[in-house]
Image (tube, rainbow over all chains, first blue to last red; front, side, top):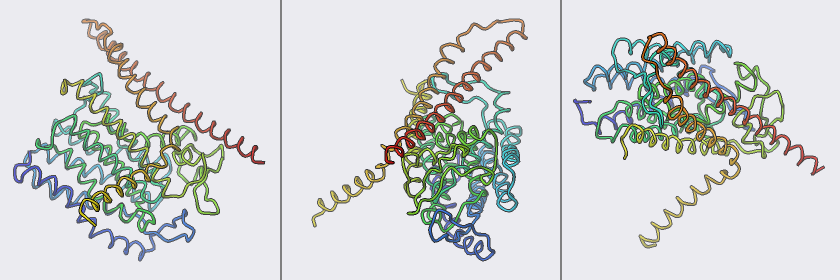
Length: 350
Length: 111
């Protein structure tokens, strides 16, 4: 447990530090990016505004700086290792994102490179036992003993979640709101599975750090966006969700809470039969005359979540994001049910 | 305005904003249905593993056979997951095709 300060204060700090760092840094980053000519055109707006790119750098920076501060405040080696593994995983994913934002990595190279992002977790796990436990908990089954299979699957978890987040970051605010909903439900599933807030658990710290930075990012990325996350942001956030799943022993609940993310990614990959960059694929949506998002009806276009949402008629950008959020709330409720089932299976609730 | 009136107005506003936010829900029933299927079938798979695969008798020796049995059980579980993903993909495709068909029919009717 964090002995230096009370648990509750520690949780508040975990939320406030990244919030303050992002709050101070985001406007500076926005100005810097626009000044350096690193901006994207918001194609879903009539005015085609220039929006500062790579806002994800501030998400990454705030998490890394917060982790450095918090490492000095926790007293056990295991907690220090977990915090370190989390920050380093995000750092690797973030750096891959920065490279992608500058040089456009191919559709295959990006997920392959992201396999490296789990290396810090694996290395920390080898140095200190307990950083992650290769026994995922499943509803009705209980604790499984996957050992070798878990070690093989581990790198793919970060790759899948990072790419899934990257593929959903297509509209103003979509990445921030859906990720915050997943984190919100993950917080409560953790509470159901492991117990109340009075027992110190580093998983809450990881979740609260992410929510803290995402709240600020959302204020800049919500409709009409002033900052885009870029691949730096989406890969970092996706890696964070994957790392929380592994380090917090919440693999199943995070996967269930992320159903809309996976539905979107899975639909794209399976329908185009491979990994391609957005620019290499036919567009699933188009803008109507009144600037709503409509389906192109192109059979060669990938099956995307937005494509399925606008099948019944065009929707404006705000409503598409609302639809994403509603679907994520539904999957979050399912994650809560899974958590209750896991707790019952493990004998926590009679 | 009294305190009770302003409090009730505040809660009414919150309630109506929540209702407004979820106005899109009926439009998403097919996708919510797909999500529910994914969730329910996942629970189904867990039940099959727990009550079926996990209850298969385990040999006690030789160690090679024990390992083979354990690997077989993991393999069977992964096969179930693969079938689950396959059905998930087919349903998504079906959803897309049905919608395209309905769209075409609507366009023809309006012509």
